[in-house]
Length: 135
Image 1: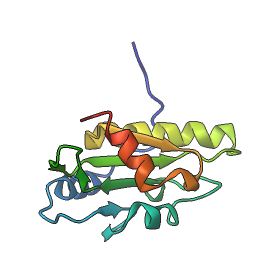
Image 2: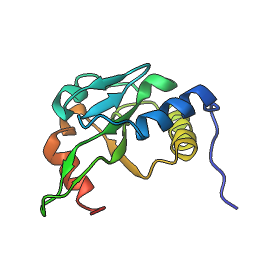
Image 3: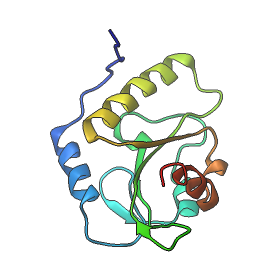
Image 4: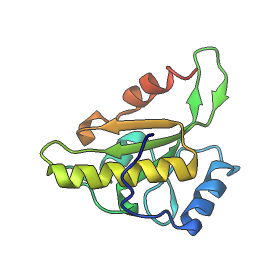
């Protein structure tokens, strides 16, 4: 049997916010960093992420709706879960963070989950490269 460390429960209000965000009508890039969706590019987004320490619980995750133009011209709006696991973080913090992250991914039914180790990794090219896997 598989178990996951549960550090916190996901607030039903957050689950509802993510559901509304998933089905929003706007076609711009947008992120939920804490309270409200922001119109933001991948490059701007990296300045909002912690560089050294993850923050708990809700400020650590980024749910990003990205306007993805496929090579064949189709447009999709994948919902990406981007989390930072900074190098040098204490092992106890990384375990707590992983448990919180897994719980949120499950509750929000997110499938495009990407990890960055440094905020410099988060660029539009990096995101497009990861999304190309899902075609």
